[in-house]
Image (cartoon, rainbow, N blue to C red; front, side, top):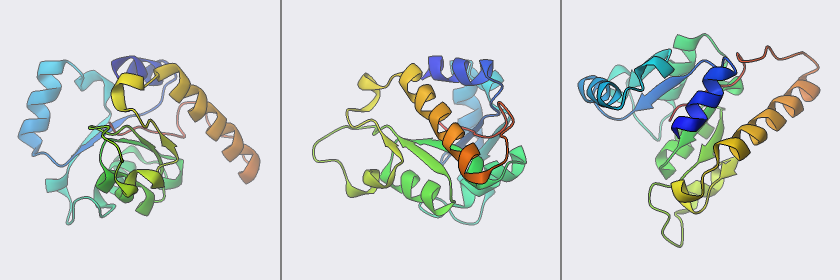
Length: 155
């Protein structure tokens, strides 16, 4: 996942981290993992009225980044997170935390599903898919997308 964060950062994609954990726990994890520099915004479910599967946390992250929800990408590891992302009107990549068969139905709502979980995740393939979505989005809307400002990820 760190490789994916590097690719997104190199392409000037603004990033937000959204979590159901408390702000203190998020801060501690970002500090220990040294991932803080990747994120332009951090949103805890404690910062909104309702947590996942409601879309509030993702909508708040989009608001903080000043980017329309339909231009955001969520990377999720839970079915509730996938549901929240889709309710927010965002694209969603699902990477199940536990890739046990059968996967919960909620994962099927994702736009891009890594069925085998993190062990089969490819930063390059996912970014190539993201670029394709950006191209299709540009063609369907008839307006150019600003490089690096149109999609976001919420690991």
